[in-house]
Figure 1 (tube, rainbow, N blue to C red):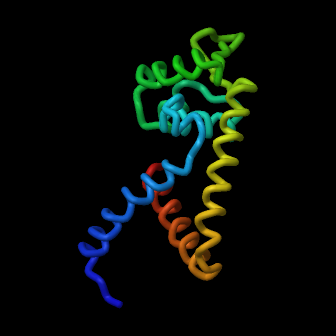
Figure 2: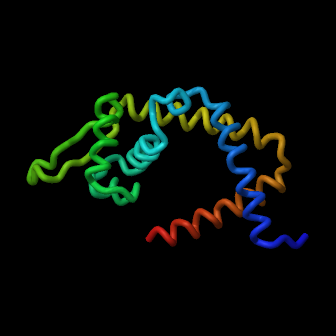
Figure 3: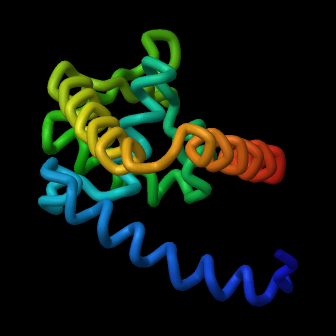
Amino acid sequence: MKMPIEEFADKINDIIPVMIREFAKRQVNELSKGKITLPQLLILGFLEKSKEAKMTDLAHFMSVSTAAMTGLIERLVKYGYAVRDQEPGDRRVVKIKLTLKGRDIIKKINYQRRQMIIDIFAKVSEHDRSDYLRVLTKIEEMLSEQAK
């Protein structure tokens, strides 16, 4: 079935808001309750994978200024999800680490999201899931390359 790229874009543009809305309705965690914003969740996930990060690394990851990142980190510290740690040899270097509370919340959100994905995609054939994952992986690779 041939479809012009413009028609494809229109269909995707119609589908994405429905998916976002329906995924959001199924979430029962701090993200859906408005306690954590999506940028904060992305930062928590980055910190979980990297164990610690400098402010400049986080700002680069989020494509924001270090001043903007300071505001985001300030709220994560205030809520007890992260801590600032100054480099002993150079007080100008500040590293951000997850607290136990931060690790727990990211684990909880990831577990709930995983269960939601299982619930939804259990109704889709294994072949279609495989195709969907293949396409998403390809898109992720392309976007990651562009970000470099």
